[in-house]
Structure formats: structure tokens, C-alpha cells
Image (cartoon, rainbow, N blue to C red; front, side, top):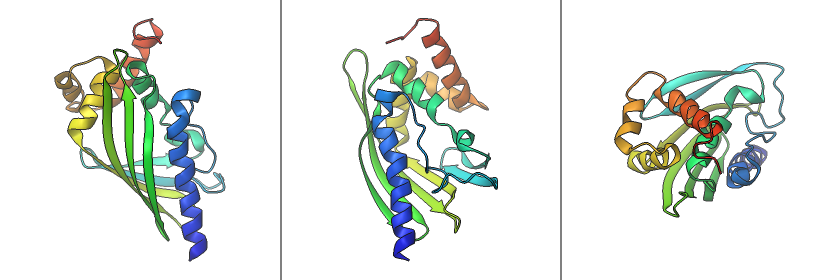
Amino acid sequence: MADLVTRNAEMARRMYETQVHAHRTHSLVQPGILSYDDDFSEPWDLVLFSPKRGDWTVRITGPESFDGEPEFRMYWTGMPDFAITSYEVFPHEDGWVCRMVYTGHTRDGEEIVAHQVDFATIDDKGRLVRMEWYTDPNQWLRVWSAATGKTVAEVDEYFATTDGFARMIQETIASRKAGQGAQ
């Protein structure tokens, strides 16, 4: 029992510590986030949930199957220091709960803060099989607005369309590569 709690606490630490420092390294690659021992020899399904979108499933075949870097590259376009600035993990036998605070500063110095709570479920093989996250939607609309340079209303319009979030990420990253919003 204690071994499972310790294992889950370590997986959570790896996941969130990576997000604490990612704005410096521009990488979210960290072993042992999706599978405690990084064993991808047997694919599995990761069910994701957010209140805005509901459930959806990602097939995990390797560490790149669930890649958060494009989303964070979007954040860093408008807020180069965007990161988790504090978090607290509550591990248990089946996974963990994590309460975190994200903070970033826009290029003109405005501080943007957003809160999130994650509920993670780990299976008996040490694999992340479910991740739920809960946020204050208004705080995150401000984050996305600051990151993309779009108004809150424009960001909200993206979310009203199929694949709108993915398009917003792609367009923001593309604009940075074109020289707009580059650091």
C-alpha cells in the first residue's frame, strides 16, 4: 500500500516539477510521467476529462503520445515565464490529486494567474490511465488571451468550434515563427 502511494507521489512530482521549470528549458520531456518505469511495450488508453469538453481518449504508444509542449509553446509566446509557481500533491493508492497555481507575465509586465486541480488515476502497472482537470474558466480565458494576443471573446469563439483549441495553438505558434511575438 505505502509503495503505491510512494510510486504515485514520485510520478506526480515528475509531472509537475517539469512544468515548474519548462519555461527555462522549453521542454516537457520527462521520463516516468505517463508510465512509472517508462514501459511503452504494451499500448494503453488514457482517458482525459475536462468539464468543458467531457471525456476523450488518447492511445498511449510512447512518451510522445500525450505531448503538452505545443500548448506550452503557445503560452510562452505571450508569457515567456508561464509556469507552475506552486503546487501540492495528495497521493493515494490509485493516483493523486494535485492543486496548482500557474503564473506568467505578459510582455508588458501584467501578471496572469490561473488555478487548476488535477485528479490522476494510475493502474496496477504504474500507467496513467485517467487525468481530469478542473479550472476557473475565466482565469484560463485570460491566460489564453494573454498567450495568443486575442481578446477573451475571440478565444471563447475558438472553443465553440471543433478543434478550436488545437487551431489556436497552431496559429499562435505559427505567428511566433513568422516573427510576431518572438522573444
